[in-house]
Image (cartoon, rainbow, N blue to C red):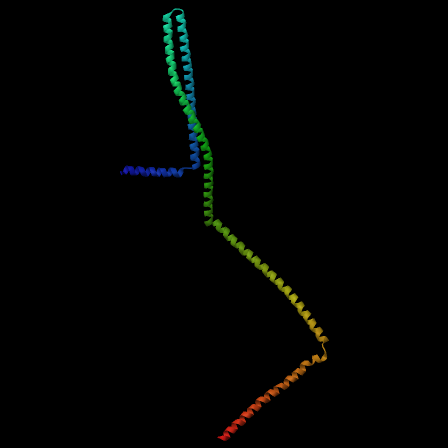
Length: 264
């Protein structure tokens, strides 16, 4: 591969890439529709011109036919008058007009076919343009939606790392802290109030219990009031019995030891 071919390919690839990057679907569709409208205008003009030519040929053919018939009648009239030469000349004129009419008839038939083809092409192009308009609106809506979605995604991506989003996050954290402090203060205030009511309720219970004890003591018999002293005196005699029993055991063991020594 030569150097020129390589350079040409690189240039064409770069141009194609630049054109592809610069293509806007909405603008391209609009321009394509404009081109189709221009083609439609030119086709309509061609159809109109073909129809005008067809009509002129039709008029010329009708005129040639009329002239041929006219010379036919003149030839017959000359023969009736006995002028054979004049009749021959009329027939020659008739033949010329008839040949012209036949030639015009062939051209007219060809022109009629051309007009019919142009009319069919015109109808087909009008249908394509109508379809293209509908498709253009659909593609424009899809392109607009895709562009809006792309912009939205780009905006969301920028928000994730922008300082504005960070500021929102900081302010949200600050509001959460303020709410936590407010909730803690409310809980503390509620606990203090609960403790005050608990003290009041506990004090009422103690006073009621104290009054009940006073009422019981005031109505109790005198011997029940002296009962603790008698129990105390009985308790004082019991420890003497406990102390004498260990002393007797010690004395018995001492006597047993003395007996053992004497036997030795």
